[in-house]
Length: 163
Image (cartoon, rainbow, N blue to C red; front, side, top):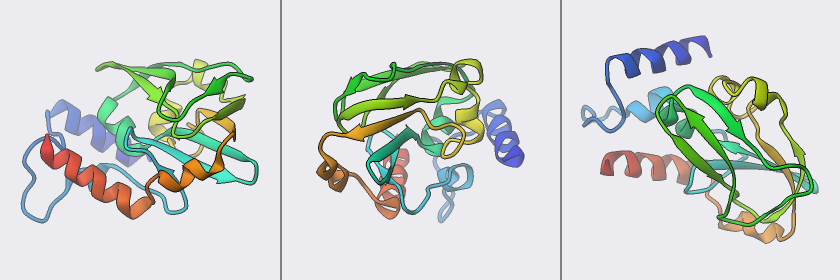
């Protein structure tokens, strides 16, 4: 973790990014980002872990890497409804403020309140401590339209190459 944060900081300081033309056979996004098997991914760079009747949602390592150091997170309250593709919150980094979209529809049953005091948990642990909300899906079949890990890696590589 510490090495990845150092590398990301060094890349930012040197103004190296995945938007720079990579060397043949070399992908910067793969060096600085991880994609986990067993999760589902949205093209807006959120991940979903579906466990029984509850789905946990956060932003991907790839997204947090592109955003930079997060300084503020805005999340909904428990009981709020979220819609697939609609915003449920926002993250503010030293670079920009971005909406966070829900990859599925449902009711928010839990919010990661640690993020209000420590938004950097998303940077240091996007798939574990940096989760954002837990949702009771209203239409679990929406998960089928999301990407698996291999599809998401390919999507990120193509997206980075286009920029």
